[in-house]
Amino acid sequence: MRARQAELRRRSTREFEAFVAGAGGRLLHAATLLTAEPPEHNERARRLLTAALARTYARWDPLRGDDPYVRTRQELAARFAATAWRHHLHHDRSAGVLAPLTPQERLILVLRLYEGVAEEQVAALIGLPVDRVRVICTRAIATMRSTPTGARQPRPRATAEGVS
Image 1 (cartoon, rainbow, N blue to C red):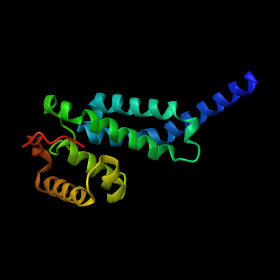
Image 2: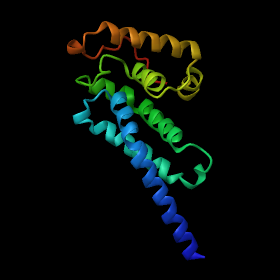
Image 3: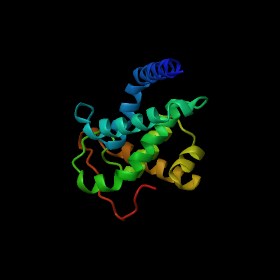
Image 4: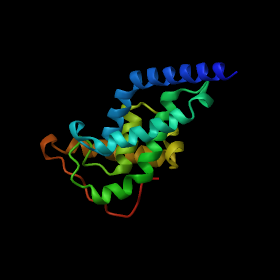
């Protein structure tokens, strides 16, 4: 019986490694967009993704039937949302492409436009009404369109409104 369990664990590990090899790059890019770090200096994004992947791996066997990419993306979004406000206060020198946006705007924009997640799913994931998600996404797009590429600087937050 132990040999069978060991073989199942090895197979599960190989499946997870194959998943990371196939999806890791896209997930890292999403994490880098969320943290608003430049791709060449994305330590926070790497830590965020590592934590999300560790959680996915810990639940790998119970995931049978669920899409591991969707689960990892949800974990990534939840971990980002849980820490974004604290990092935003202390990390205003971000230089990534989405640096002009607030953490909440980045989260919604990445999920909606980069990941293609439906408004209803984004709203459920972050605990906001669908109409609010739509407004925030529209505002984020307008900000990105109105900010010249070379002049993109993080916007200061007007309120203590955190990422939900």
